[in-house]
Each structure stands twice: as C-alpha cells, then as structure tokens.
Length: 156
Image (cartoon, rainbow, N blue to C red):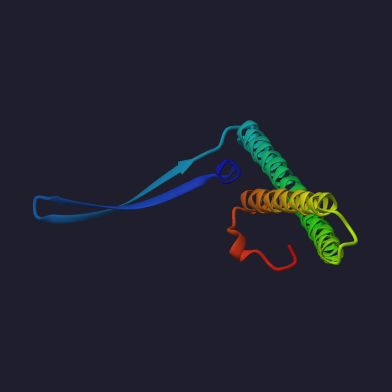
C-alpha cells in the first residue's frame, strides 16, 4: 500500500443536483499528492516488517523440520531396538526349549530350566519395553507431523 501511495491518487466522482427543475450534472476531481519524500519512510517500515515476518517464518519452519528429523531418527532407532529384542527373545526361547528337552531326558536339573525360564521372562519384558519406546516414537512423529500414524507412509 505504501508503494502505491507514493504516486498521485486521482479520484473522479460524478455529481447530480436538481435546481428548480434544472438537472445539473457535475464531475468531481480530487488529486492526492504524495509528500516530497514519496512515503519512503513508510515503505522502509513495511519492507522491514515483511523481512521480520519472513525471518520468523524461517525460524518456525526450521524448528519444525528439526523436530520432524529428530522424530524420524528416534523412530528408526526404536524400531531397530524392537527388532533386536525380538531376535534375542526368539534365541532365548529356542534355548529354553532345548533346555526343557534336555531336562525331560534327564540330562539337566530343574534349576537350569528355571534359569532359562527367567531369561525368557526378562527377554519378554525387554521386548515390551522396546515396543513401548517404538510406540512413543510414533507418537512423537505424529506430533511433529501433526498427522495420525495411519496416514504416514510405510517408509517411516
């Protein structure tokens, strides 16, 4: 607006008057002349305000992108931890089954089988913790993207 205001503003306006049965038409002309400095101060203020708004937008955008990047990295790490916990649980369950067969054959005592069962339980808890961390990471990503997890691409 201030840039437009640095140029003269010409307004034309029609007029009508009824004077003792005479129809009188007129044409009004107004001309607003800018100051000698042609609104340079106001133009500079408007440009500075626009640049400030652009800088604030850039700051908000960079913070949002950083939050999204951190959430993606966190989710990838949590998924890797969950996969590792599943592999460990599978291995421990296999070892427990082998121990159970050996105990049934009489090669081992009950204490060894109980030890393996404790290891299975600990591995199950570790897997549950990893899955909880993964779900929390999904929640952080949803918050960062402001999109539900069902709308996220499979690459996440």
